[in-house]
Length: 268
Image 1: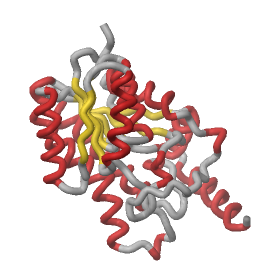
Image 2 (image 1 turned 45 degrees about the horizontal axis):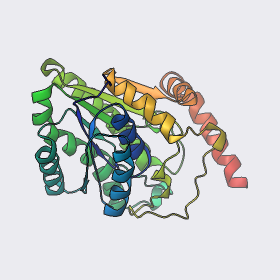
Image 3 (image 1 turned 135 degrees about the horizontal axis):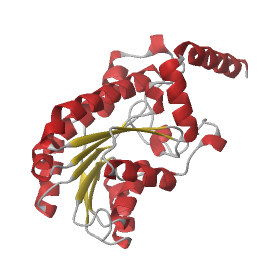
Image 4 (image 1 turned 90 degrees about the horizontal axis):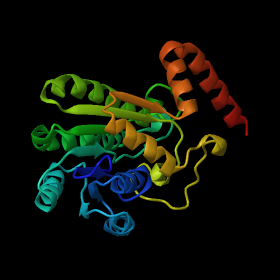
């Protein structure tokens, strides 16, 4: 029997990138899938791919910055499948820019999606997870521990996600609900095509070092396995684990490296 046979998994931000590939992996392993996001066309295309792997799939339009939209999406998931075993709070975006030029709206937009959206999604799912002794998964980032210039909102939001995951792990352990907070390093993702206002920009270029970027399907496999094993915290890739270790134990050194990278970039 496949690992996830008979389980129902709901993934926010499931129409593209890591969300879609996690959904594909869960489906390969026997789960029934609900994917949600703001773009119906992307969700329907992803659902068609997921159906090929067997199991049922439901595409549900949802904006995680709107509590009523989360309510409606969750109601549709429960109506379709009758229960919920796993919620993956994957919806996210990245706000970047010179710190003093960032506005209050920029900061609110970042935290509304990455932190408040994740928190409210999970809070509304917990009554259903309580019935199944289910699993919560939060998608953080190595950026919570390794900091660079001009990315303060994103980095701060992912640090908040790490704290949220720790809190959930403590609060619900006695009820059999576990929380896995996943911190990826560089993974091929659409997040770099989302601008500061949450709009998808196909033309935006990913400036990360190509030799360090994991393919999305490989990342999804290790992430789904971490959720299955109910790991409290999971950091990957190899460079991600190394960066996380340095950021936790040698933050001054990491800051020096980040400043040097920023200085070199400014000279080009």
